[in-house]
Image (cartoon, rainbow, N blue to C red; front, side):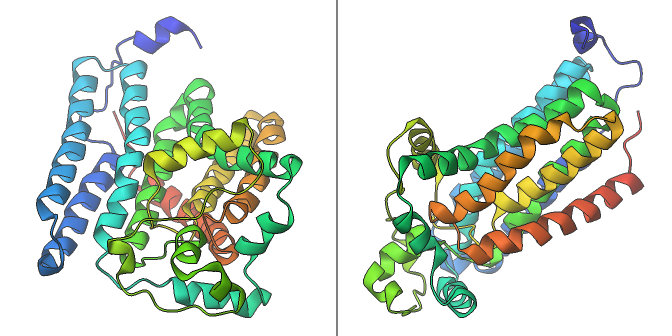
Length: 324
């Protein structure tokens, strides 16, 4: 791309908020209304309100920057910052759902009924070797690369579909977050630690109620030490919470990105992108179970959820397509 084009002022700049920005504002208002309904259960309403003020304020500020200098670079900033701010919205799901009864015992029992074991427990225990764990951690860590990489490909090579792509990706995350707000499942790394591995091996899955409202202890990240495991550990320590396990948004969002990657390849008439995307996608799907972030059923559910979200959001955008 010609660098000059990045800063060339657009003659027909988009004046109003973008569709994904309305989604963000709508999510902020809807979830805070949910909190207000059950306000007696929350001790941190002011913090939840302040989070929404900050993030909606950031959204409006990004719109203001673009209006001052409407160009491709300010539009890119408008999207990239929202992708980064997903890291603020994710732990917010924990703050909302921690007052609800935990449902890990239900999902763990599904797992047991299907596999007659807990894959999240046995996978890493039977394959702790470096040559297995490092590819698994590479796959899990590649999530962040894929999340930024696919929108960037559209920005650089198919700018006419960049806003469409951004809407689908960002809106899919908030669809997942809304689901997590109402379905508190922590995943094996938190639930197994709370219950005890001995009981898990015996197929005992007790209800935990609101235990995780005050406990965030989790199992250590499995596998041999290596650079990719170290990266996953850093990301885990930075923002992991006992929330958002079912369905797996790692798998679901990556499936949305897969659908966008396929569309990109078709439009470009070249499948080069899939040569690196598919291996990382496959590793990511398995890695979520390997590191005990998700039950196998979480990962399995993430795929159809991602496909459905993609087609619904694509259809919505195509009906409300942004015009200059």
